[in-house]
Image 1 (cartoon, rainbow, N blue to C red):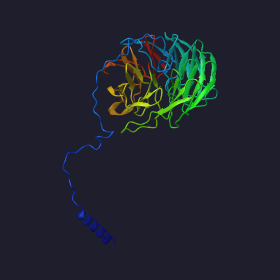
Image 2: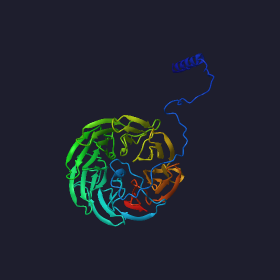
Image 3: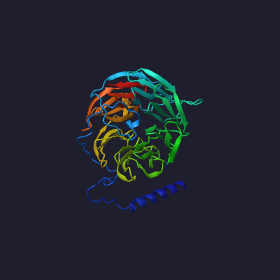
Image 4: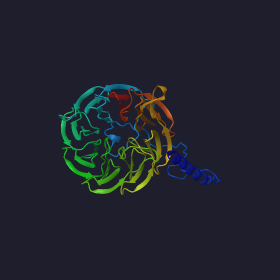
Length: 435
């Protein structure tokens, strides 16, 4: 019986196969299914375009993220081929339980840093330690990501991964006040006038009296429980405060009272590339004139009208860190490890340069991705600090690499420039100065 069933089944299949029509091969040219779609490959040619970023300025300070509350720094002066001037210990470097993630800040001839154990250290511009303060609350362990530094009026303002804001005397490290935000992932603080602005992963932003630490007002946006890094810093220009949230939402308020002006968002991913859940605004928004520039880390960048929030253009380029806007151009390290220059007027790519993506070891096996920090435009060059132990310099006009400087142990922060010196923190918890 079994043999009969099998033979019968085989015969039925054979008869069906025999009845199937022959495949018809249609004449004509074969085209890629993706042609004409948004995901289709686009051939680009790097172009050389003059950059009018102005002559380098001998800035004395770099007091907060992006240099100021607009995150729009003038072109700092720096040597064409900066050389290592000193190395100073700032505390604990990268470990299994903590990572360095905070950029240095410079004011009044002192460099301020925070190590992976929430220790705030003041180092002179000659490399000598002046003071150190632990910002770990009693009974807590060193966990959490977030925080940053801003200096104004002889006071250091610092936020931590524990959701606290500190104000300390810049000369001595004495604590002036502390404020518990009860929120994780606090951004680096932004100082403007008498106010201190902070945003956190829970979708809330604060305006704080910088003299007392008391909350003036708050604003609520769309947070994201899937984010695990620090929130992007707030940007301020005139009477407008722009809060970036981890959902990708931007909320603009009036500086006096916090009344909402508009809400918009940076949304979307790079088509055809799998990404994770980090869809929020990835760096501080840059306010240039009446335009807001913001990007996420998954492949989208947009320009918004500062007055209305209306989108002026969107480009399929993300930014993994802080953008640099100068001379009608935007410089950024995008979401696929390329250094790019875009036209600030319309988002068109002027040039792109591939940066190292993976660290290779023997037999071609990768042992980790390369992280790139920056860029900054200083001394007429675009500079990127990388975790593979290189400080790379590029021509802003053409994108051609003009040089590289060894960066011991690899970068763990974005570079900042003040007094003709470039400062960067490495993965071993050291402050490196290049003059």
